[in-house]
Image: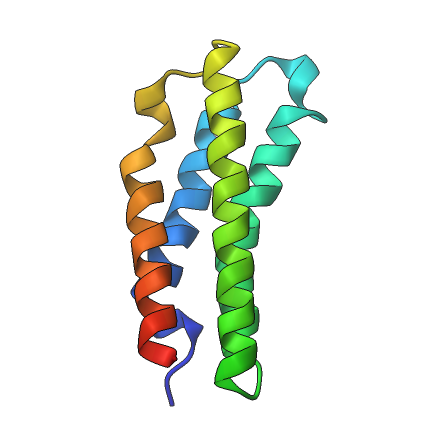
Length: 114
């Protein structure tokens, strides 16, 4: 039986969480409960919603959680742009290519499940 752990998008987004944690560990300490926390929560929400959707009974529910993951991805992208604007990180550190890749995989999975 296939689970969320078998999905490439879950694997890539889980690895991206680790990258985000490493990057945000370099943010100013006074941002620990502000932007740092917000970025980490958004990043964690992506693989978490993929997993939760896969644990549901129907494809309709799975698709709903995949859209929530896309929403979290968009939120994360915005927060990373703000962090870059504040010079907490540079654009290369944010690795927007992986973010774009995750988005494409999520839309592809939605299409495959629909």
